[in-house]
Amino acid sequence: MTKKILVVYYTQTGQLRNIVQSLTKPLTEDSGYDLHFEELKPKPPFPFPYNADEFFQVMPESVAGIPCELEPLSLKGDEHFDLVMVAWQPWYLSPSIPIHAFFQHPVGKVLIKGKPIVTIVGSRNMWVMAHETIRGYIREAGGKLVGNILFYDKAPNLLSVVSVIRWMFHGKSERYLWIFPPSGVSAKDIAGASVYGEIIREAFIKGSFDKLQQDLVAAGAVEVKTSLAMIEKRGKVMFRIWSDFIRRKGPYGARSRVLRVRMFKYYLLFVIYLVSPLASAVYWLIKPFRKKTIQQQISLYQSVSCE
Ligand SMILES: Cc1cc2nc3c(=O)[nH]c(=O)nc-3n(C[C@H](O)[C@H](O)[C@H](O)COP(=O)(O)O)c2cc1C
Image (cartoon, rainbow, N blue to C red; front, side, top):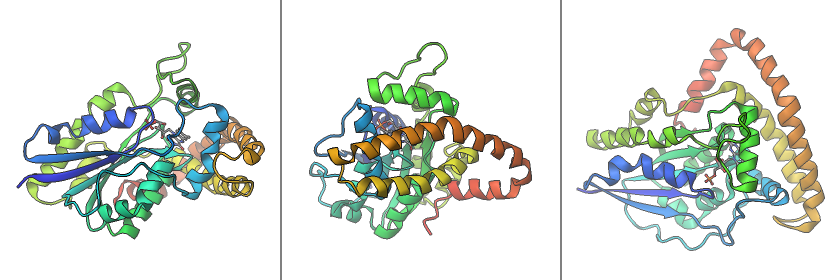
């Protein structure tokens, strides 16, 4: 029997579309699988490239999980799928607003209910806290997370911040001045994504997703950087406070909150370039004494538990 797979994704730059196309190649090229690609389209679309105010305006709603409107989905929810893949990106240590919208959409909830779910993350490098929110959505909708695959920008953190800002504000992702690496997930990692599609195909052949995540992790699908996860944890607490502070002045896009949005921008630059390098240095000093805790964290972030 043909296996039916739903692939839901949102992308501004096209990166996540390239990732899902490469990853699902072993399945799309096999006549035993029928894939339905559902691209989420916010109504109106988010700007890309952004200007600075627009880029920071999306923070409060991303962090608070306030959805945007979506163009009607092509599905009603009563269609049968043997597997649902959701490819998503973090915005401000939280799922992007269109991804919140999908998980909160009545049709989205039905599509997730009772299904095995594979999540695919296309991030800069900070995805761990946002994935906790995704786990919560899957748990609430009654889905079963069976796999998680991470793609991230492997350039050093402080350099990739500059490259990503150039990408987001000017739409340019190639190498900049010789020091700043190309932005985004590397072409090599995107081309290699089909390895994971092959593992998913093997799980279908075995007739069980029980060991899927174990096999994906063994193939390198989820490299956890605990030093960044530590920064994320503290950052998320502060982002929540900023999100409430800005939203008190008005909803997404309101002129009345621009001053607070700009205050957040300067706060973020201060944290990224002054606080986070110091926090990382302290982390590297204490790391040898916290081996067990770090291993526990890696196992937790690599797991597919939604408890
Ligand atoms: C507003 C905004 C906030 C972002 N915040 C994060 C973040 O917190 N962590 C991260 O790893 N990447 C972050 N990114 C990068 C995205 O997750 C994503 O990798 C990149 O925007 C590629 O876009 P696409 O997947 O929509 O094509 C952010 C991007 C945008 C536009």
